[in-house]
Image 1: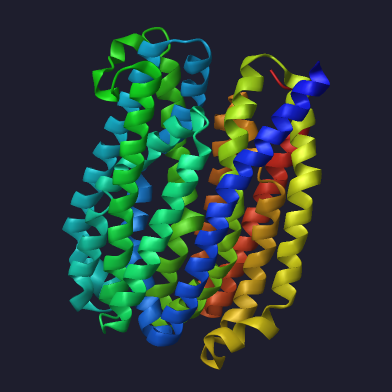
Image 2 (image 1 turned 180 degrees about the horizontal axis):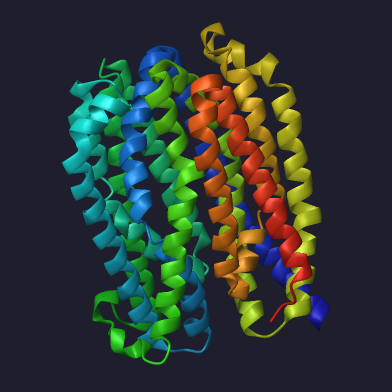
Length: 434
């Protein structure tokens, strides 16, 4: 019986991951084409400037972001399994409220600091309003986090795949059309902002329909009183998710801002292209984690600790290892592939891309590690590990970036992330499941 269930679960896992990966692969191809064309059309200076314009609002938003979707997935999975409708709706209401409050707060902060950001980070005072426009798009995008959690919990992975594909097509079409029309940096910013707004609307609509179909009510009808007895636990998980997002902001967002501050838009252009191309790994990691997290959370809730660890070993050897190896092989071929695509003017991006690929391969091999920690309730330990990674980046970048530029910045990220993930992996092996 257990073997039959295992086969069925495995097939469902493959179908779910396949749907998301197909959409992500299509999105990756579209974004790759967009990135190559926009980089060629704008050149390193304007391409880097576009990255700086969008990185500052992203940095501010991530500073406040509570990552409520992670708490939502954990508790929606649990409360859905036990049929507790009131608690399901309460978790949704809490998640949406937190996300919109954070988006509004981030917009106010960007609005207050935009003159400084345009002058000192982007080195172009005239792009101040571009920064404001991009920051404003985070408000409707606030629908995404909890809506994604709702769809994930109910297994609506095909819906997620279609939304992601539609948004990627919309983004690429708008950006290419506007840049071709001569909008340059403004076209890149407006295209990304429009896609963010569309993402929020589509996810919010899909989640609302799913909640009404499953539970017969909309999320705003939920009452926070339903979380009585679990409120402290939920808020504690949410607080640590917020801290995790905050410390994760440093290795993910601060690099572009510091590189722009110390070295200027041109070097940011080389760095951004390499980071964008290597970041295509996220199109694989995202679907894998989205599918495996609810499964691991349910196995943990059922007390199947041995099956939980057996599952992670399968994921590491059968999925993570082959894919991580492919990333390394692809990086080795990048000197032959990249220059013909973007031109020799972007040749300095090649070593940066190869350095990034080391950290990305480690992340891909251990893609299951973060969902495993969260499912076990070890979020405090995970946050502590990410704090150490972030502190290492924060300590090294101000010294390394002015001297070694984009190459040094990428090396710091890749080394600290790889060491951090390997340390957390060793910790998970030695720590008994509960």
